[in-house]
Structures are given as C-alpha cells and as structure tokens.
Length: 231
Image 1 (spheres, rainbow, N blue to C red):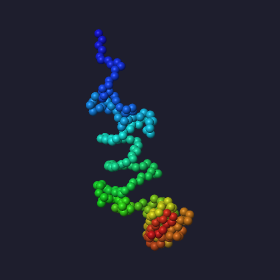
Image 2: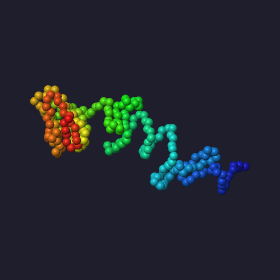
Image 3: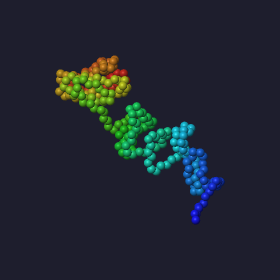
Image 4: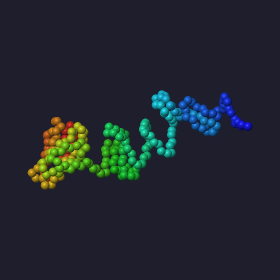
C-alpha cells in the first residue's frame, strides 16, 4: 500500500517572518529569528537596466566588510580615506594616463618615517627633496647627435669634432635642465658644438650655437620653454 507525506495545496501563511519577504529585486537573507527569509531595499539585484544601473548589477547601500580577497576587472572609487598596500602596485597602462594627488608625498626605503625619505614633496614648502639624484646619462661617440628630451647628462666622447643638437625647448618645458660634458681628455684641435638652430628660431644664450672650449669642460643649460640659456 502506498504511503504519502504531507502536501500543501493553495495555502497561504500570514505569519511575518515565516516566508520570503522584502521589496522587489531585494536579495534574501535569513532573519535574526531564523523563522524565514526577508529582503531589504539596501541590498538589491537588477537583471535589466534600472535607474542608472547596467543589467546584472548588485547594489549595496551601506558598508561592506570583506575578510578575504576581492578580485575585480575595474574599480571606480569616489572617496578614499586610507590605503595600506604591500607588494608591487601598478597605476595606468597608457602614456596618456594622468595621476593627480593633493597634499604632500613621502617615499621611503621601508619604515614609514618622513625623516628617512628617499623622495619628499612638501605641499607647504612647495619643494621636492631627494636623498640622492641620478639623471639619464648618454655617452656619445658620433660626430652628430640629436639630444632627446628625456636625456639629462650627455658626454661628448669622440676625438673628432662633435655637434650636439638641443631638443625643442617648448617640448622640454620651462625649467628643464641639461648638462653637456666634454669627456674626451686628449681633445686638442677638435671642438664640441652645441646647436639650437635646428628648431627654427630657437637660441642658446641669444646665439644659434655655442662652442665648448677648454679641456674637459662642461655646459649647463636650462630652458625657459622657448630658448636655452647657459647657467
């Protein structure tokens, strides 16, 4: 003989908390009493475009605490109170990315101690302090060389005459520095020329070019954004 269990047909339960409750699109969670599930307008899920939300979007209006790892393709953050990160960090992936911060910046070798900085930028003083500095160095043996905007120290190291063409002052920008050093110790009948004339009316100390004279002399230059000047 067959046995049948309980069956509820067309029944309703009006006891609060004993069934699924909550507003439309709300995610369900077990009530504190454990008597059923309910939902909240502060935690919702939309399968279609609703308000300004894209399809398949979960919305939490409140705080979220995660004790594990959060992985995401994109993070959009409006306000950050505190960041504490370890390991390698990467910002940006194209040359036109721009990262702006307001306030002071301190880079240290390890411990968070502003007095042991490697680099410090103070918003109060408007100055940048560097523990030690290293600029890009290029040793040039060619007789003709176009200096790149990213170069800082350029060494003339050929026994023959050498001509160096300065980068465009407007590209380098106002305040850009450049050092050209005659590094060939036995230079006697040859010369090192620094030319600014390859970029239209650009000048170096009101001249089209400058000749570095003497034994192993150097030339220190700065740009005002239009021309080059000797320090």
